[in-house]
Length: 164
Image 1: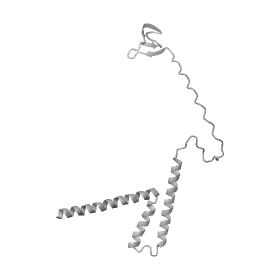
Image 2: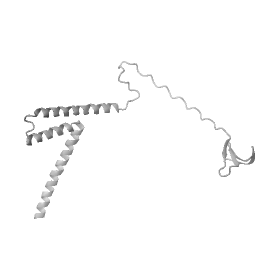
Image 3: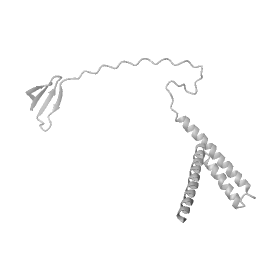
Image 4: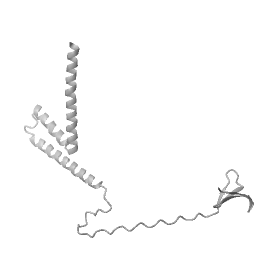
């Protein structure tokens, strides 16, 4: 009997806790979206303090100064957010700048793209050293490779391999 009563009490407490958690999370997201978290926190703390402490009897001016400061912070946050979103907004290429009037002439159509230049023909022969044997080098042509050996200032032809 005690276990069943404890289970029911636990389920009720968890349900209330989850309801409070999700309600608080929803309220926080709304306050964050509206940029009034600081203002709401100030009003909440002031309400709690006025209930427990007589701080706002003679010092009501301090409450209003703090309230005005929080309002200024909130408005500044709104202005900053709107400015940042407008500055980050991508602009289309055909969109007119804001300084121009609506009566400005329509932009001329873009000219057709220029044809790509033909690829440059490869220059032959290309010369390469043989790795591991500095006295040899080969020449590459469009259709073949020719192997040579260095002999002082001269190149001695050795053989030709044709490309497939």
